[in-house]
Image (cartoon, rainbow, N blue to C red):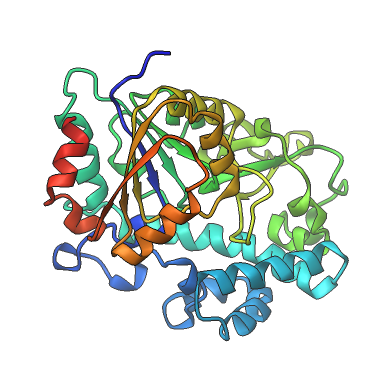
Length: 348
């Protein structure tokens, strides 16, 4: 087995939250990506939640929670009730998918594109330390597209571009600009009564959101519109897409990602000799099981989670994976670039 010296980088919500230092921020901080515990912040995101009024029940109940674990446990309960036929909870769950999609699209549009950001610094580290053939596999748990904006050669309009690139991006929980295609036969012949609005229809028929999708059903929204856009008088070519994201529940059933992307990730985990973890506490069992599968060779793991307590938590969650040699950094994503650990990780 050839062990190649390029990094695996795993990005959790903490990485996007620390996308740019406040001192360099040129856009409204109200659009800073939230941590899970702040997903339903009414003061910041009321304009988005107002577009999906059925989410009010989720926002109201989630206001009594205090951290990520409580939010995920609460949403797990909402999902269970919805799948068991609770009509109101079904509508709330449908609204959650569309709310998250819209929220992170707006975050990308209103907070992205800033010059001095940490994702750009991260990509520069990859390029500077292997300038001839810069290579890395970045496993990204975030719905937003702030990272992709900074990846040379990545075209968000084509979903295969995420892996057909020297710096590969694997969005295991989906993306705000991805959709699952709804196949023929799930809609009435005439969608006119719903104004051809997939959200309105989904509220009455939530099964189209909860169904099992094939990885072949996932498209970038631009690619999807290009191939399946509606033409008046030709309803047979009118296709529909619902948000392709994994909502934040305690344990995700599976990845929301094309299978070819998962294969690319597995190959990288099999070959690489080092892993940098930023803002992810090791809470996804699906990824942990894959990491166990490819743990026969030693890997250096650097944990950057803002403080040592959070790094220790991540280490504890990953303790059952063999051959991981941990180094914990008592620093934020922003400050990591000024450490010797950063230099050692990328140059070794």
